[in-house]
Image (cartoon, rainbow, N blue to C red; front, side):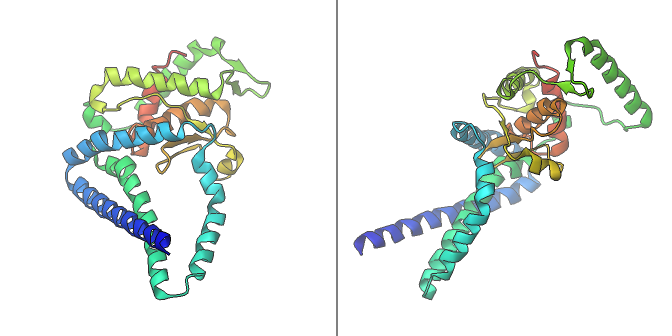
Length: 271
């Protein structure tokens, strides 16, 4: 009986801490919306250590922990509902509901510090002092021609399958490491981006075919800090998708900016 009371007391304390984290995260998110400097500071000095810690913690597992949790989610939901139905008195129901709400608060807090605040940071174009020019058909076409010329210069170094698609001979982890190293170069060249690079690799998704059905190339799972990549798509999409998800892992929240940063990282790769 005494042991059960101690357990209940510990749960109450943890729940209170979780609720406090949720309220703090909500307050920080509200302030960040109206204060770009505050959002920048939070993302760099608090968000980065959290993203780095989670990436290294779950990096010990070869497979994606987030994918496993998603696959187990129906069973988890069923178990939660079953346990809720077993709560006989109102006090037990309140305690159980509080526990579920505490878990939600923890997930919300992680989201705010790792990704949410990042949407209110200074834009990449502001940090790189890029000119705000109108995108026209002519400059898009000239950009296409320039990229085509660069691709043609490298065409002899690329192997192709019989169907004409390019083949990536490198292992997935090797590609991830090459791109991860490129972020160090990018950070040296543009320190104002505050990428805070660190060693990490993306993870191939086992059920990539399911992702292809929804046309998802990759996803950054904030609750595990993992960069997950669809390997069912053609090989030529993999390196850029890895770079894109690693950009999210380094604090770039906006999708268009993650694309741009991924491009900059890819063209600085040694390979």
